[in-house]
Structures are given as structure tokens and as C-alpha cells.
Image (cartoon, helix red, strand yellow):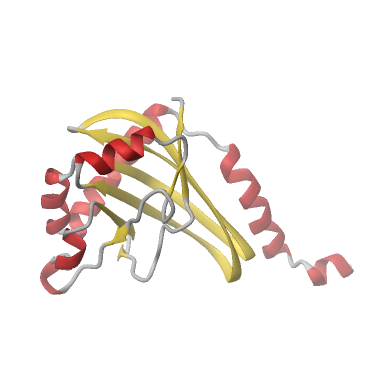
Length: 182
């Protein structure tokens, strides 16, 4: 009974989620289908994002990133890199955090490489860590769906959103992105 008071069932379930999610591996077909859904949702939130996507040298799309934690948290998702509208590789994103946190969320992440140099640097890495190997400017959307002009000047731009819209005050700092075989 003491265990139940110290670790309520909800907490135990979340801790289990942290270990189960990375073990789940989506198939190529599942990632492709979820990516199409992510783009539809993204374009519904911002027309400026669609224009930006057409200018990007490459786009990394994670259609489902699960983040959960109780004091210690983790996140995991799988996605793909698109160059010229074609899939060139599959990747996962993983991260851990310590601090005040409780709960779980599912979000979608799109990272746009706006220059060929930024894209080449990403592709050449063995494991790309946001904030260390490259800075990702998280886009904020203003009135009328416009993206902040300072963000537009950055070589790597990230969008984090859910079915409720773009999410603010989030970061990808510390998330590690690694190529996977599919």
C-alpha cells in the first residue's frame, strides 16, 4: 500500500509510457501516411507556412512526437526528411528533461532547412542535436497568419503544433535527431 501512496497509478502509467514509446517502431507506410496528415493540418493553420515550405531546401517532418513526464520527462517520435518533395531518409527525435512537469502530450514537429548549407550540415551529422549542432528558430504566427520576419531570416525554422493549432513558448533545444532505417 505504501507504494501506491508514493507512486499513484497515474504516475506509474506515465513512467511506463516513457519506456514503451521508444520501443514502438512505425513502418515506412505508417510514417508516410501520418506525414500527409501532418501537412494537411499544418497548412490549415498557416498559409505562410505553406509558402515557406515551397522555398525550403528540405523539410524534416515528425507527425507524432509523444512527450510525457513526472519530474523527469522524455519525448520520442519518428518522421522523414523530404528534399524536393521526395523522401530521402527516415529519422527519430528523442529528448529528456528534468524539472517541474506532469502529464503527456502529442505534438507534430516540422523543421525546415531554408539553405542548402543547413540541409547539408544536417545530413552529414551522425546525430544532430538541436541547439548544439544547429539552432532552430521556432516560428511564431502573428495576426493574419504571418510568420515573424526575424524568423524568416533563419537557416533552420521549426514549427510545433497540435490539433489545436501552433504551440508557443516551446523549444527543440536538446532534442537529438538520428537517422533510422526503414
